[in-house]
Image 1 (spheres, one colour):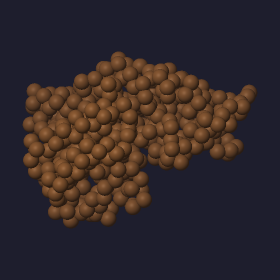
Image 2: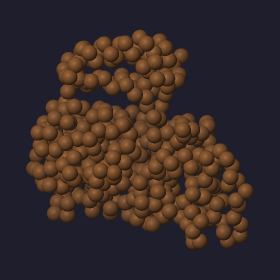
Image 3: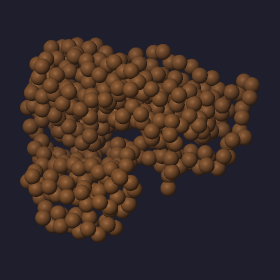
Amino acid sequence: MKKLFGTDGVRGVANVHPMTTEMAMQLGRAAAYIFKGGRNRRHRIVIGKDTRLSGYMLENALVAGICSMGVDVLQVGPLPTPGIANITSSMRADAGVVISASHNAFQDNGIKFFSADGFKLPDELELKIEKLIESKKIDALRPTATEVGKAYRIEDAAGRYIVFLKNTFPQEMDLSGLKIVLDCANGAAYKVAPAVFEELGAEVISLGVNPNGININAGCGSLHPEVISEAVKLHRADIGIALDGDADRVIVCDEFGNEVDGDHIMAICATDMLKHKLLHKKTLVATVMSNMGLDITLRKAGGKIIKTDVGDRHVVEAMRKGGYNLGGEQSGHMIFLDYSTTGDGILSALKLLAVMRRENKQLSELAEIMIPLPQVLCNTRVQEKRDILTISDVAAKIKDVEGKLGNEGRVLIRYSGTEPLLRVMIEGQDKYEITTWANEICDLVKRHIGEK
């Protein structure tokens, strides 16, 4: 069992274990040792971050740890997570490191790694890093003289990533005549995202592009789609695009300000790819959180869906294993594996805009392709992540609800991989009923293991 790494790297409150400078240095040393692999040449690891205040101290600690193991560091500064994956592979670096807690508040931070090919590390490599730290096996390994690593700043990293993104958009198209409201969440995409859409010809109204270290995700970005909704209506824009703090996910709204989530975006893009025979094996990979309406839409279009556990890494693993090229999550993580190795909010928005251009339709019309079943999500903060089915009255309530839903809905209970939260999701035909049931389950959980 892993002790440090969760579903998306190491994460926690900055300056509190495990997100301390001491641990960051150890993570840097252990990762450098693994990726160095005994090969006799200079090795390089890319480090990028979002805009959190704590990013400075963690970055410096990581740099010190990596250099102390005789590996060079390429610092790219604030850049979206998928941009760091892209720079890692394009510069033939040995690994990449992202300092970000994604959609979490500014006081949190995280450290996650990419291998040389731009994919997130498998569980066995993360476990190997943990064991190196715990065993202190590498404490005595101290390169000296010319063997110590150096740190370089890659000044044109943002420009490289912007060029890559623009090249994913069809060459015969541009975005001229489109008005876009863009919310960058005061995060890692605050410079890159506006440049991409503007250089493709769109008129861009930019929000959340003034980071100060503490306002990342604060009342903005993909967690607050109401912001772009109001701005779209105010500016009479064609589309609203909201990214999260590290820009690996996106939520959009149509020209009327109606939210269009990841399921709808996948439905639009997958059916378009089916139409043009570009969807590998006619299969979309989604998670168990995706609405059953997405399954129905794909079946009608002649495709099918494979479901995985929650988390974009599980989606990517299933895609690579099965040879599929499109997958994602309702939350807005979408992976276009023909172009990127991980979720990319800007790339996903560009793919959606390409369908709008190709079909010459507004987003509201395209979104009609999927009719979602009513779905509610209830979150409860917990003291411990106990097996929920061992709590008798909670288990009984879940069984009762499942019996009432029958084949016309479902109940999904899961713990968050990054926060002390239990998530209760119910789908069914009656919104009032499923809301009531979800709240009843959450209330029962609170009595037993709720945060005091």
